Image (cartoon, rainbow, N blue to C red; front, side, top):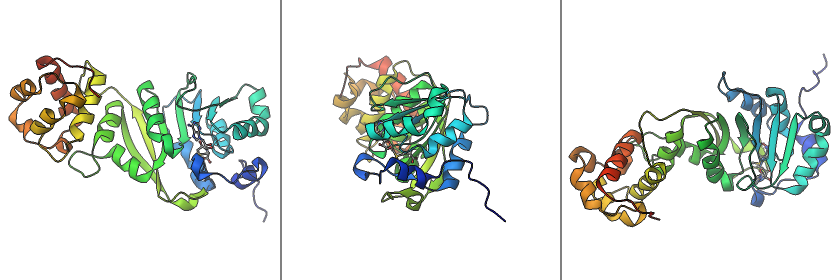
Length: 286
Ligand SMILES: C[S@@+](CC[C@H](N)C(=O)[O-])C[C@H]1O[C@@H](n2cnc3c(N)ncnc32)[C@H](O)[C@@H]1O
């Protein structure tokens, strides 16, 4: 019996051809486990539009190869210029056919294309900033994070992981951890476990008129997570920008005020936000 020819480029061969080992100081942890690579595009929701997939941080192209099979067209953003040049050479046919664009640049700065969904093994140093660049665009996302960060994204009120990151993530999308990945799946290995999060965009079940204030108010209250909401509103006006925190406290219901910020659902934060905006002037805060 002979082994079937591999359907996709081998990750080790790609790294050999690229002539790189991966530099952890530049967030370069390449996925080397074929089974994980094979599974990642399948975590997109079934009904996701796969006509233009975005990959942040292409590395040596092991995931890019899978995305080319999963979608009609792929754009890769890669900050390392040598890796971007390698990807252009390695995938010259796909680039020539118009199926693949390689953008050499920082995912936080470059213009993003009109993508329909993203599957990315994110550079962990900028994973939060990249995620909050992508989430407001309202597309399905399958993203790899450090496991501890992923757990905070999906956390429920009342748990120790629940915080500002959970509320602001869940404001934009339904989120779930779909797989935990051990360090051995990468080379070089990260020091911590990783986890894949699926984000399915949806409008929240509540309304906030001033989204920037909502996110700032949530940030402010979680700086005082061990205080009651009453004290947290009063103590953080310099961060939230509330001109009259006492007026907000006077207007809010006792059952909200006596809780801790970590016990409020995103909807409860939204209700408090609307009340705050009705009751007090709101400045720019910090
Ligand atoms: C965790 S590796 C993933 C590589 C590849 N997709 C894989 O799964 O093997 C992250 C990649 O992002 C690149 N990178 C780091 N910072 C970046 C940034 N700010 N913008 C775009 N790419 C970045 C790194 O050079 C590296 O190739």
